[in-house]
Amino acid sequence: MSSNLLNRLFSLEGKTILVTGGYSGIGRTFAETFAELGANLAIVARNKEKIRAAAAEIAEKYGAKVIAKAADVNDSAAVDELVQEVVAEFGQVDVLVNSAGIADSGKPMVQVSDEEFDRVMGVNLRGTFIVSRAVAREMIKRKSGRIINIASLAAKRAINNMSGYCTSKAAVVHLTRTMALELMRHNIQVNALCPGYFLTDMNREFFTSETGLKVIKNTMPMRRLGDLEELKSTAVYLATCPPFLTGVDLYIDGGHGL
Image 1 (cartoon, rainbow, N blue to C red):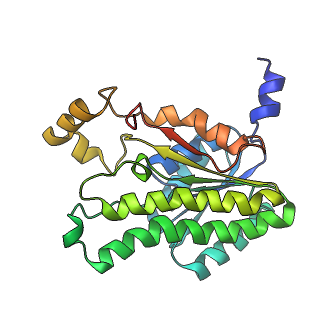
Image 2: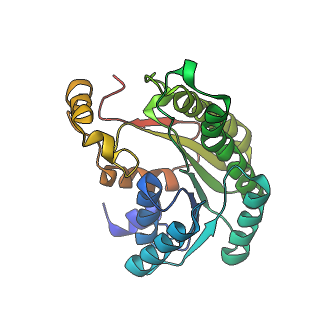
């Protein structure tokens, strides 16, 4: 495949991409991938210090223009404001990646409090909706855009003691389909990425423990976790996908869902 064809199909040069949860894990992997390919970035998270540090590191490493925005994705007023700030800075948002998410408390559902359940649903589902709504309003003006929602294998596979997480990610997949249906008339593609178990800072302690190693050995077909590097090509594809690809939930799970 010639370099000209690759650039035509997969170039992100000069594009503006907003990534929530962008300082670690999957969000950070996506952000670095896009920066390496020449995109302008806005990375968003609640932790002001971590998001600023990540923005500085990515900008220095890849020579990209990166801005950090500290905001709670569950706060609609703050989200609306930050989207307007990103548009003022870069002119538009070409791609949105909804990667902000939290895990459950690890309790059986009969022990989960209202507040614990609402917290997970608030970040994982409501936050995805709020950020998508704000960005979609800007994308509609330009009749162009792509939204990538990070869901999970847990969207279709029940997991013990993760009632809130599994429910929220299943809801994100169906929200993705609804958004895709409504926004396709505006030339906006919406797809969901559903990763299996990838080693991240969030799960590293568990999966390096004796119990975690047993889980890997006994339940994962490949007998290993995914490497975040294995998501980079998918990140590029979903950010540059053809208009005819929309409403898809794409599972990358090492065969775990089988």
